[in-house]
Image (cartoon, rainbow, N blue to C red; front, side, top):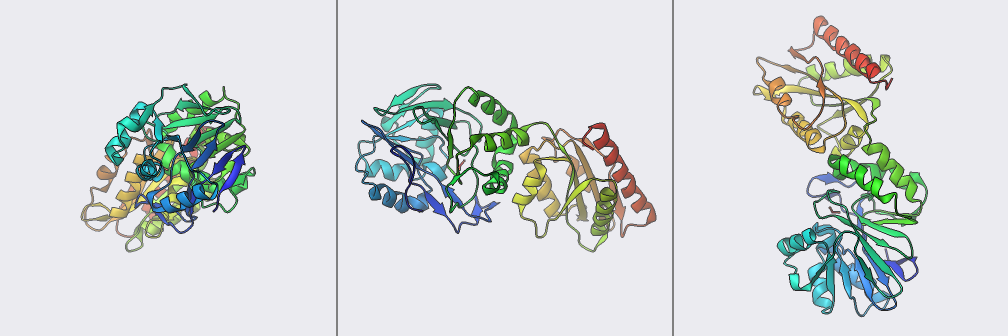
Length: 394
Ligand code: FEO
């Protein structure tokens, strides 16, 4: 995308990464992503807010040249992760008078990760302001969304809040400015699930703090820019709240059909009881979709066969992921099978130390599930129903 004006002398100068399909060699990007960098021309000084992934540096330069930027005074670094900060060393070389403006923690990270000269950094504290002449930038420290140094920058005169990763989306937007929830909901929820969910309490405290600011536009550093900030802020409030939905997420893997039979039977019995079920065959699952499903669900049930007495490695992966993402899930079930012996239950139970869940009655069967085994699965469906009723979500 070329440059886009988002306000008075305020421009999107970032890069759209239409074809990127994986982030951190981990996170699927079915709709690409963007690295949003913003240029603000004040009457006296010019500031660039965040940079772009180093792979898109030339695109950023082209955008800056296209609007005649000869001098940058300040490069605001809201976050030290390389998809936003990675082009800063090249920018400092290209604009020899520019200074990086950031907080003390970010300054150290920029030095450690990118070799940014601390002599070229101006350190700002929470609430501090920087004048560009007719425009003022105010810095709001916002740790742990999602690194310890993350911060927001607020353009006071235009009420634009630059939030970097927070409130962002892994989307490559052909429409940059959005005011309809359908234009960003899926991408924003995917992003929240993968990046922000482990930091729910920080998300809520920053949302609370932002209530004291008048915000006309939210300009994150991934995905579209929000012209109706309430939509994305309300969505975050809901996702990060303790409220859960009458849903069971059911990641599973099956080798010879036993676990699959149990999963299918449980799915059927849960549906009969009015519970929404989201089964994920881990052989073909998009882990982003799995993460998204964990945002709201009251219950997680892991389905796994036994491999060499432990859980199938794909079930280990899904369990590790759920534990790392720290969803608000309240109940956890484990179902599965084994051929001749299994320690699967103990291994999986030992992997969920971050989850504040009540563990439901496990159902682990030898070989193909028989009548009694299916009865135990039906009892598990009853137990889930009862828990959801107790929690008043049904
Ligand atoms: Fe988009 Fe935490 O970097």
